[in-house]
Length: 181
Length: 61
Image (cartoon, rainbow over all chains, first blue to last red; front, side, top):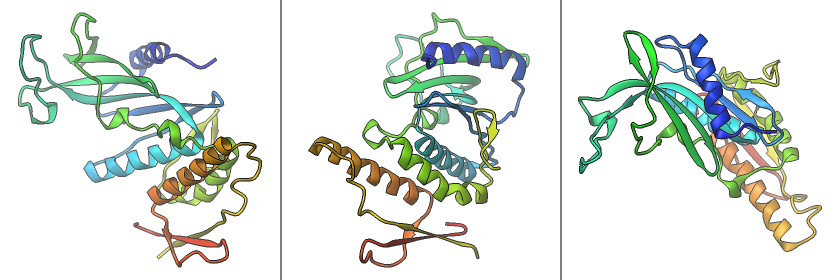
């Protein structure tokens, strides 16, 4: 049985308790249509490398048939009072705050949990702080429903793209086995 | 420079379809595969002829 978005966020909570540290690369964990788990490490040093890593993540999700995933990454967040007319865009907000964001995504939507960073420690943001939206590139990695690829074709595609992933030094672990082997 | 080449053929993509809807699904799935290859930087080397599409991907693309 596949985990629900809520269960993926519970996993994120447990994972963060033992794994979180400043500057750690984002965690990206996909669940495939066949209920396999795919871990995709995202390592990047600048914007260009980040975009490239995300393109490869989208390719990997399509090739493995991922239909839900969990991402955990450091992010910026803007705070505003409920009465505020405009909620500032974090990238343009001088008062933005660095947070850790866990996002669970499937084709029906996104659920998330925000962790504020206080004295180097994570604090789960209370649920009474309403988040206006969980959006951004980390919520847009699934192929559209109409672009799902059947397993047989996916396997063939993976064989064709194996050297591409190798060249990009893009390794993933599927069901405990390193696919680079 | 490393160049990767693959061959794509389309002649059997509708095989197994029992309805027009299934044919549409298969065509869409094939198109989705081409989109993935395009995202990975593959380009069509020459016009497709006799159902043979030669795709190439150059390092750094």
